[in-house]
Image 1 (cartoon, protein in one colour):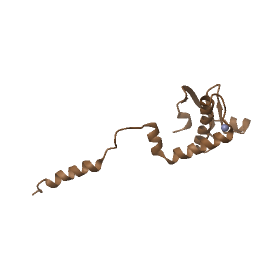
Image 2: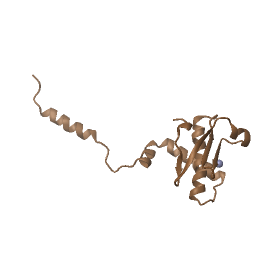
Image 3: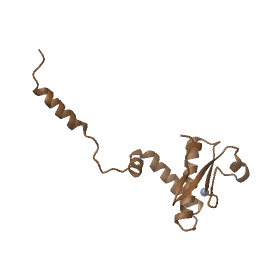
Image 4: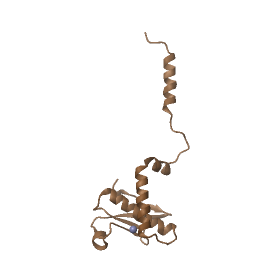
Length: 131
Ligand SMILES: [Zn+2]
């Protein structure tokens, strides 16, 4: 999935638009690769950087948004945001089953095919051999 394919990201009921920066405006004008705008509800990310860095930057800007909304305007400093976003990025990437559980928890047990297979094989073993 590309950055420009992302739907708006909902933070506390607010739709944050993900804006790809195709012209390196952020780098040239502000020496940044991403920017969160709390008024316009945008998360802007430079696309002239490696894909994983785009993803990490988006998460960084998202942590700014989460902090702005859920911490009632008390903004996190850059060190806090960098530590939380990079740590969270690593945990999410290294634990896909955690992401699956967080986004799609289920109370139903997983299919146990060994039981189905054992009962099928059990039935076959009681059948008369072919002649
Ligand atoms: Zn930042």
